[in-house]
Image (cartoon, rainbow, N blue to C red; front, side):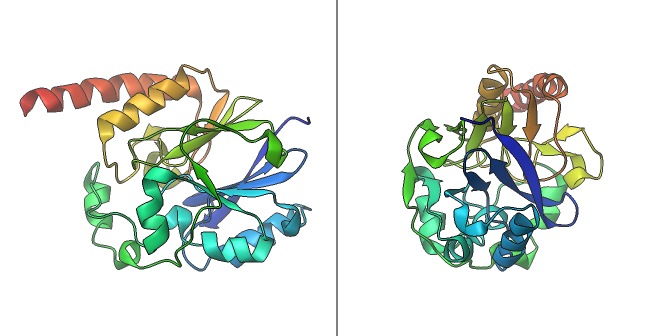
Length: 241
């Protein structure tokens, strides 16, 4: 099987919100952006020389509106089945993210008041229900879906044969990519300690780089150093409770 290439598909701004196109024997899409962005993702895939009807699978990394918002639309446009983790079925079936959003810092507290986070997306039922590590060879790429809970209960990442980790909101680029290459928390985590444990589990697999939902790719060594500091910060916070 041909080795898997990761191509970013900007959904908002140059790096603010990303979907990804994984190229192998057949193409796979990771994430579906905000409501109403399905056609934009479809057209960008075509611009990369890929027939959107050849897409074999759409993987949704988690149940937040900026990642599953156009899953149903993209399913109609491509005909591809949609994969999502069982623990985020509530948001997928209702079209609403599980609330309240739990901010990780100032940006999250500001963003939680943004009405666009609380809109209803078109619901969908995953055709491929993920409950554990899932090999994607049958969908034409050398990669695995890896459960990475914490950001949401049903968060997943995709690890390719080349060591590319398409990480959803497991970690982010600082200020949505305005400070490139600097790891940071995304605006929200349901369970910061569990998310950090998932991140460290993925780093233990020695990925070559991390492709994030918000921002530009991150280098693993820099993420490791950030994760150590974040572990200390969260441990101090827990000790004060």
